[in-house]
Image (tube, rainbow, N blue to C red; front, side, top):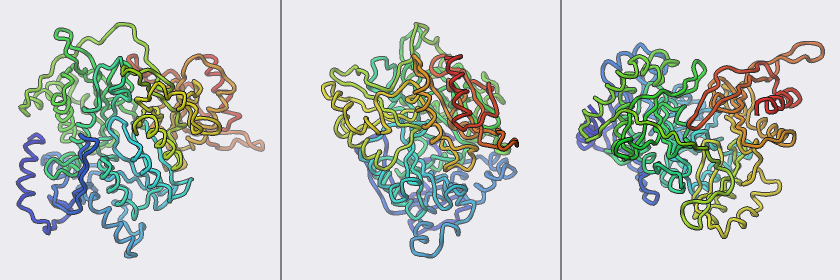
Length: 597
């Protein structure tokens, strides 16, 4: 059954339940808060405080899938014991008890603390900051506004300038750092009231929907990705029965799942490293705009895979795009690997089928939905010369008298005060709108051409400020994962090292074009080093100290990754065991820049 059929069944059950009916979390239903805010409208948001009963994510799985989960990996067994979607309500109960002194964060069951709370976007940073969490939001197409930015600042400020910070991610998303469980309900309610959510943003869920940061303001645009990313965000995170955030239909996936929609030939969304990548392309015969589909791109410790062509094309309308993605996601949910998590990503399932048979399965699934959606063979890609354009700096829009201004945010890290300063800029120059990019920077759209000079002269973009609308070719294109400051998996600290070293490189080396230098703390490659011009990955190194070879923080260095139409992943490091101390790493990077770029 497809989502519509399941939801009709779901609706018939919900109607018969009373608000007082409490059912075991490990059974077919779990109580959920009704907090609604549809992303289809930037102005509509409704907050409900009552509680309804929703099916668990596990209840939507076929019997065969549940049986595989029973003998699956520990996380699968944990989800069967108590559903991940239980966090939608549990986080409120935990917070209440902590506030009232009935318990502390240390009393929260380990599986809830470390795993299930990820269903509301809360990732415990127990190794670095015990009792504090990173809360990841969902920001479809990377578009936020000044009010939201100020709210982020208010959320983290109480945790101090070291722990209470805001990060822009490589999925053009927002992460709030330092959050404590007792504060989580206020943050969740606050983002829901502001038309966002943190639900379904971590672990075995569909992650943030990436689109074009130039959607609607690009003279080279092929598809405006805003409606499509919002529609997919709602498909995943908005319960169509109750109209609340938290959609149990997608509440139990075998692994994380990434989607990206490109709006132009620039491929600002990086479709080649997503499970589903939609690349705009007109139909060769009709000229209708649509998408070629690529599948299976991902990065992990065990494997890094470039997406593969799926030989499918669909029109670029909302119905076709949502239906295609829903069909693929349903197949993945029910048939994906649940024993070996290293083989749980979509690429493994596609390879198990074979591309042609997987295509046939997807087409059959779409036809079963009876939504009048047609899937065609992949269309010939445009082959006229095209040069990928830059996002930083000042650029004209197709709208008369309007400009977009890209601003560097070093390593994507923002203090509470910097969030407020950006909000002030947006209110003054871009009607409150701010766009995030996968390079962890921001764009102010629709700036009046007559006010550009005023914007560029703002103190927050000059002097000692970290933010700049005119950065160097190196510092403006630096990307970094969280690093050891907060992440227990990272082997090295990344953000502070990356920001300091890139500033020194700017003074030592002159380059004639942007060079993308990415940092990642471990082989999970959240910093996407294989896609970078130069990628720095945390790893072991040894250095002679007082006549002895001692272990020190070090790295591997990758060279030659590409993005855009000619995307390419650099899979093997050209150097290993390099200490990251400035006097060791900087000379190596200078040599690479001189010889390769």
